[in-house]
Image (cartoon, rainbow, N blue to C red; front, top):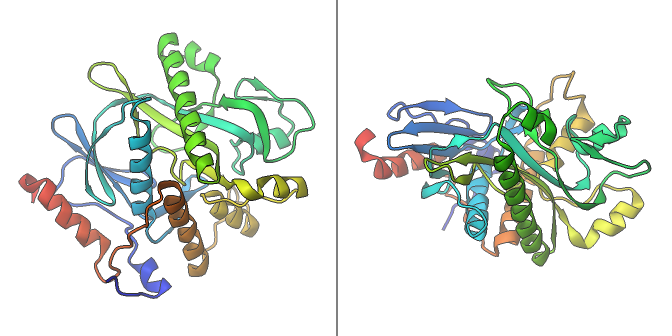
Length: 328
């Protein structure tokens, strides 16, 4: 039986770093720590670090485990559409993956006019822009309105930090980031993955609003989906039952995703010009609960919370020592 812990203890036990000196090729992004291993392998460890507005703002209990296990569910549910990079899962926070030649584009699919960051569709539209990511939008649309059909709004991935930058199919091809044939395949797979996500989410009373996909090419030139898929970090999920009523009233949808924290931060400051204040423990726990609730609702599985008395970092190290004994 897992022993109970206070909210403060849970926050204190968050995994904020997964750097292990025994392993080679360490690198870090906002959420994951990674290692480059021989034989075209990479080790990805999802920490509990939480990013928003392109910076790490807090650590959220269970976040890394939820992300890894949610992505695992979706990788399993979509492997008939597109192969994925997974080799094995040594630990609930860890995935061993194939090392790919990554495509320098994020394939963002949107089915609703929404968002709160500067590069999201709604803020761009609210500023008066009517051509977004190469797509024309009519006047008179409202925030959180459903689009006639899902669209791809790609972004170029930053090099050495920085921000994702909106782009278009025409610019991608003009700059030769991918070939026309590769773009067609990436777009086709992105829309097919999104359609599968919408279908399975709808069965659980959820709306898959938008998401981002990252792809790479394996040693044979095959398109492979990487990073994560349909998680609460990479996607928006709304509660279907209350969407229409809340949209008609001009209220924000009931959500189970990262937008909860973005909206909280935006209510406290301008995150682009002002420091983001410390997020209260109670807010972090409410946020954590949304991530766990999404996992359970999507998968139909009960989320197995780890023993709070065992440091997550130590548990992961033990799992890595078994998976990669040559380094430990």
